[in-house]
Amino acid sequence: MFEARVTITLKKGVSDPEGANTLKALHLLGFDNVRAAKTIRTFDILIDGKDKNSVKKEVEQMCQRLLTNPVIHNYDIEVEEE
Image 1 (cartoon, one colour):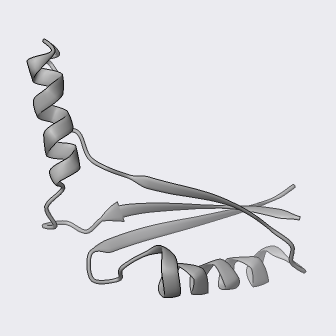
Image 2 (cartoon, rainbow, N blue to C red; image 1 turned 135 degrees about the vertical axis):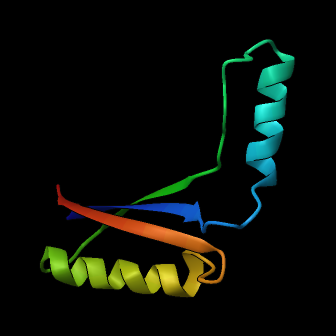
């Protein structure tokens, strides 16, 4: 069994309205020292596989087919054996 962690971020230049609203709300609550807030999504996936490389390739396909939009997202995959 393997655990794959997929971290998804927005590409540079893509607007992040959720991050911008969070920053605004933090400032309204008095957290004036916060300079930036950005949205990052993470998926933790438990998956059976032969080895780390085959699992990583399968998770890569998941990212390309469902988890991300390649036009606006970057992603990183980390795989650890359980």
